[in-house]
Length: 174
Image (cartoon, rainbow, N blue to C red; front, side, top):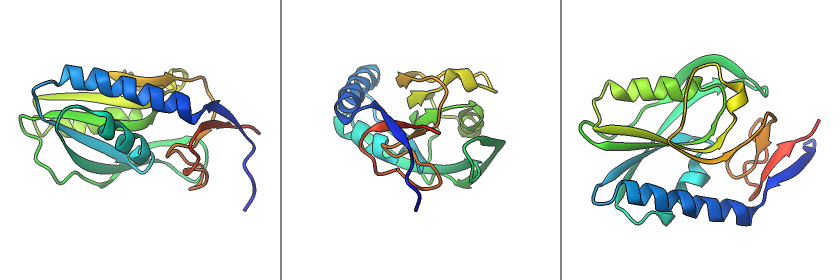
């Protein structure tokens, strides 16, 4: 296995602090309500687990799996759902948790897909936001960090299934 050349962008301690800040904001916004948190597999699972542990409100959990990336470092542009939610979301408050907003295509697709099931509200919490790469207009309601262009790994994000385990957010250097 070749070694990825990477540089730490956000160390574990900075990530932990930011996740707690996001959880405080989400808990405040949904105080007195039960939230359904929908994670996008695979990249968001570590962030979502940490976020849920920091919430002070009750929540239910479900997952979707969407694919827009092939084996390379750029989006194919086509979004395919490979795992749908199993929970009814009609008249419920929904929080989608995503690892990174890049082109905006995946989240635009998912929000439209879920709106057809008539939830009360849908908001999005993205750990990372790469705004320069948007192809579809999309803004997350909660954002951990806004980043410049570059391929990011660690804290659940991978490159060809490598580096997902890293506790820090790193950018791959060529």
